[in-house]
Image 1 (cartoon, rainbow, N blue to C red):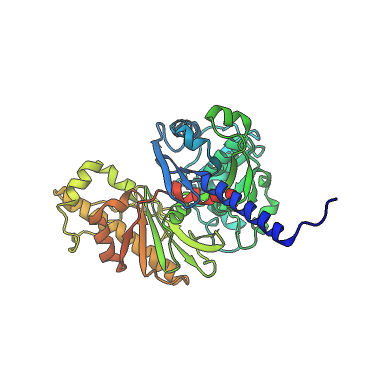
Image 2: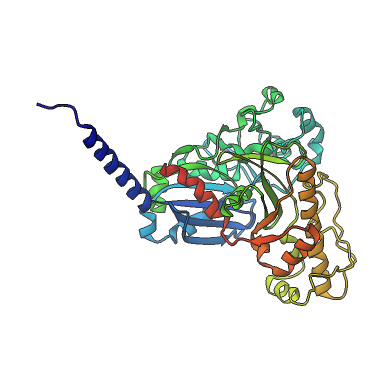
Amino acid sequence: MGGRISKSKRTKFAQIKEFNHKKMLNNSLVLGIDLGTSGVRIAIINANKKILFTSSKIYSKGLEISEDWINSLKTLIQEIPKGLKEKLVSCSVDGTSGTLLACKRDGEPLGKALPYFLSFSEYKYEIEKLFTKECAGSSISGSVGRALRLIALYGNEIILRHQADWISGWLINNWEYGEEGNNIRMGWDISNSSWPENFQNLKWLKCLPKIIPSGQIMGNLCNKKANELSLPKNLQVIAGTTDSNAGVLATFPNKNDGITILGSTIVIKKFVNKPLEGKGISNHKLLGNWLCGGASNTGAAILLDFFNLEYIEELSKQINPNKSSGLNLLPVSSRGERFPIDDPNLQPKLEPRPVSDSLYLHALFEGLAKIEARGWQKLNKLGADLPQQIITIGGGAKNITWKKIREREIGIPIKICNRPPAAGVASIALQGLL
């Protein structure tokens, strides 16, 4: 006859179960997918967040082409060694915050996406009427203006999805959901877990996604994609975050650190005790903590308007970073800025251009460093402590001359981190192992 299992045996069974679970975790891997301004990068990490594989691909046609996002991602996934693919249990996606795509209910794109850096000042009055307080969504550079443009083009029977949400939907063949961080610039209020009150009267409210928190399971990889990409059929897709937030997670920051992402644009972020309010300011809830920041429209991309990478490296060696260039440039790529100044009509100041290319690069570095410095001052004015150290990632972080100029202009020590944002968003996919 059967009887009760003794306490010692129950303890032993629990220990065996825990051991087997840990063994499974140790053998399991997760995939991070990072969709940036210029291309896609993927990273595979283990339970200890060690990077085992990473690869990247530049868009062949540009950020506006959703087909390019898919083709780039397919190419990268095909390159993953079979032995790593078989151990994948979950994945997460990040994308450029604000890049918006109109599509049919089945996810089929309608034309090109509108990139995050496009703003439509003709909708300024309509945007202002929707918001009772300043936030990332109330800015003219937020997603609402792009949404209004797409609705004007395609009507209000469409759905509107940001880049990461659309790719996540493509993976699970369900475009119902949107991750909260990727929809802040559309007006989603993370503090109250709701759209603004005035949104309830919108004729196009049904175009917006059902919002879920970062780290929540969106669904399993659909069978068609699993077969097409040779990925496990039970692969979980976990709601990710924005590309800049993924960059932050990749640095493993502490509370006193600030993070600057020097990619095509300059993005600054810092963990804070409570959300900050202001135009162009974003507040994200990430792994249980508030992450505040802002993103400029300008960054390393403007340097490539004048010089190629090899020449920038050569010219940087000719610059004395401890001295001023004597020039005062405002290196914004085109009219309009979103942070630290929210002004859709702000004009670039790229002249006078000296005969010396190294002097001009020196001045561009200084101009970008001053924009970053004003960003930290803006966050401080709104209530965030100034960081004791700035951790920098992104392509621009590798330039030591620029780093020294930034330290001079900002007055805060800077540390370089080489971990890619794809590894940061992969750490969110670790939720699938829990």
